[in-house]
Image (cartoon, rainbow, N blue to C red; front, top):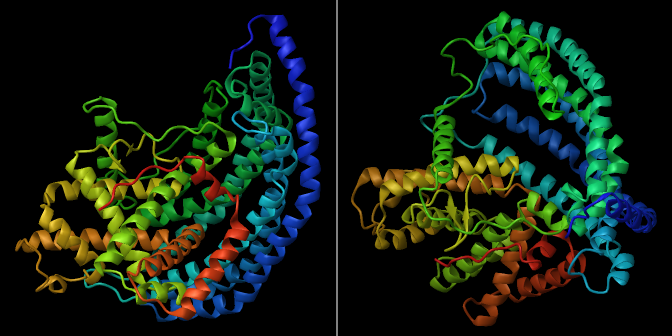
Length: 590
């Protein structure tokens, strides 16, 4: 878009934009008033019913797992039993309140954003889309929200508890605390919480007028000059909406500062325990306020001025808070970033920035990485079905019972492992998804969950590079990942693995175990389970039609009914829409 030059051109651009924006705002608000109550009722009643209905089972099972687990030491176990009733009793209250807030936010903002999105570039028949977009699709999205919460309560929670109840390895030690350290920690927390809450909230309130005025100033300057967020046509309505709603953003920032100050104070008690020092805990209490003050100065482009002192709250040479694995992951990530920054290798095409507002939201939700993983599971699943490494019983067990590690854990683990092997062979900076798409720490989705995944995957890629697998070993490894336990060296006896190097085998087994642990954590994300279940159903019907497997008539009828219901409920929902808009990438087969 051409930016207007001159005062009159800018004034005319502003005058012509305001009526257009206000009409869209009124239309979106009207749709939100009509659709919002329905969405709030679906999300609030559905989520509340699931949370309250399963709360007794969660309460009892949590206590059973804590009492029977060997991963927790006796002192920590006693404290957990004593203090667990408080969070467990607050769980349904917080769940119901959260459901209400999510329902209101989803029911109001999604129809509003869909109205503005309907006038974006590349949308045909804008008038009808302005009235229809964000109506039925928002209601279907509310049903998906309830389903995801149900998956989390039924599957993810019990998966966490099952992991807590698993047997410990020979080299593992139970987690416990020292009673002699607790008095100073509690005392520091009692002092730090009220002080940090008072100081951090005071700093937030003191600087909130500056945040309000500076934000309005910057947004209005961009509005008049058609710069920044007002440069692209599709972003103009949302940037205008940001001006109207900016006071709410300032209020939200103050509330977030108030809530986070409690955690700063509690963390001071944790520092006192880690360093076995009352003084270090108080030092962190002061440093937390100083760090927050400096952060807000940087955020608002203010001069540092006179800031609070920042005393050291870690003893010299103390590394209790940083494990060796964390150091390795940080070093590998930093090395890869530096290598790419210096341009030592040729440039590869990266995942492109989305062009529309909704696609930008989907990008922030790492929709491209999700799409790649499920597309890879779909392609590799067909191949493994044809080779007999996945049977009809495996798919039927997952579809009917929701269990089955071969399909839900081992298949994604093999897809990620194959990506690591490809990346290692091509000496990639990051993860080579396809021949010309490389995901690095520069274009990796800015999401905390994915940030925690990138470091371990880069470390595993470097380990795979040092192993230098041959083609025969890769083919055998595919079978071993899907059929063997991979927990101890003897699991690979008489498996036909080409290499007789015991160290190499042990390293591969450790990599596979860690990948399966990463996938197990990913499978607890509700959207992952929903999409993987859809993938399993599609693979099952496709394999039956192709004659690859002989499925059960009963299961086949159930799958067809579920797919028909799914298509009715999830049409035009965000994640499927993101895939159709071309945000996914091509995947290379095994």
